[in-house]
Length: 196
Image (cartoon, rainbow, N blue to C red):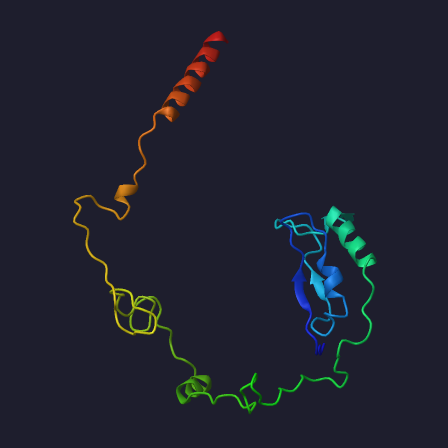
């Protein structure tokens, strides 16, 4: 399919009641030049809870979201006009160079010679997990740099504390309440067993 006007790939939030208010806007004449429509997410109810229907064997059961979407479509008139559809097909041309479009050619950058060689003869054997070019090759960072400086502007320093760990000062205070609750539960369990 050659769509000269894109479609909205998916819409339909599920965090609140789905009223499908975007239907009125999406199919208005203000939007038909921007979007040729959209895909509702999603038809069948899955773990994500975006479904419009539940499927069980050959049985399809509409959910509340289906009815709400149906109501939104019924309340929205079909847009008029073609929204600027290019009936001759093909992609639209790039605009002429202007103050807002600082490009005067549609030529793409040439492929670098090393990349062209790899395209012809392959990249060779992968480095794997060890050796030069692997995920473990190279040095480690010795600090941080201010944006654009290219040099290290701050480095870490060792702690003078004898305790280990970066979050030593974040230890939670001891709380005996869980022990009390456990003891009471154990006592009632024992009492219940004795009464049987």
